[in-house]
Image 1 (cartoon, rainbow, N blue to C red):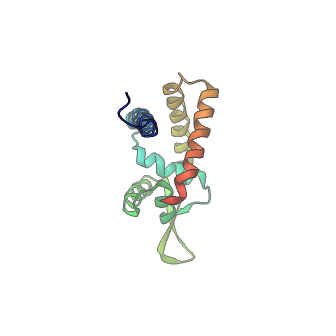
Image 2: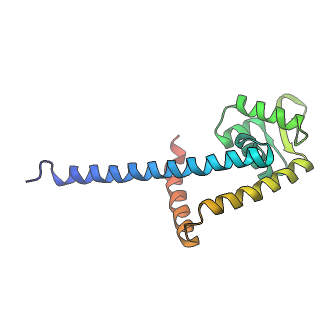
Image 3: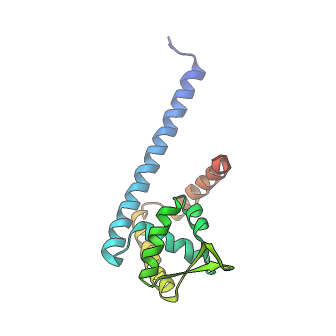
Length: 158
């Protein structure tokens, strides 16, 4: 005899399956992130946050406000400021004021920064391809589409 009604048992097994999925996604993400961090450091003397800021700026050739970078990366403005300060001192980004407003900083990659990021991005793509080589292109596309639809389901609720 079953001790719990079938619907309750089903909800529990459904929730366990989703929990296992989340754990697997988290472990896979952490593995890829760990390898990326180590290789960015050893091959480019760069950090993952630095790479992320440069990636955001690379996507917007005209540059971004500091607040846009922080919102895009979902990190605090303080975190972005420190990274941008170091990128400026390394000659990879420039800061300017928007319409003369001293309270807003507009940031964009320099020509040198664009070239440096393009090299890092190509290496990063190779690393991810290597790490996920066990997935067929079809599986990768299907999983990506599923995760994209999942994201759109909850993204506006935050």
